[in-house]
Length: 75
Image (cartoon, rainbow, N blue to C red):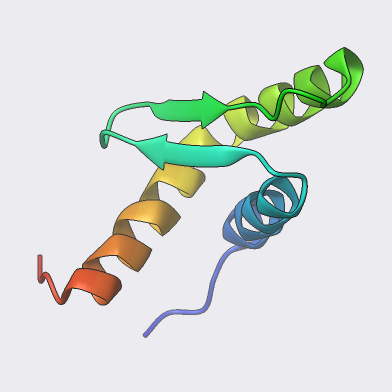
């Protein structure tokens, strides 16, 4: 197993921060689907949205890996 890159570490931290803020994140494998909490201030949302877009590729990979582990799927 390879060690995570710094981009993967940032993406993982973003996912955890987004979850703690109540943001729901999903993927279809090509893009991210984001669901914002109703009460979240606009600037906070835009900050998360920009950061998540910057690390989209890494975030998609993390989500797909976590789903594969959870469901027992193999590549």
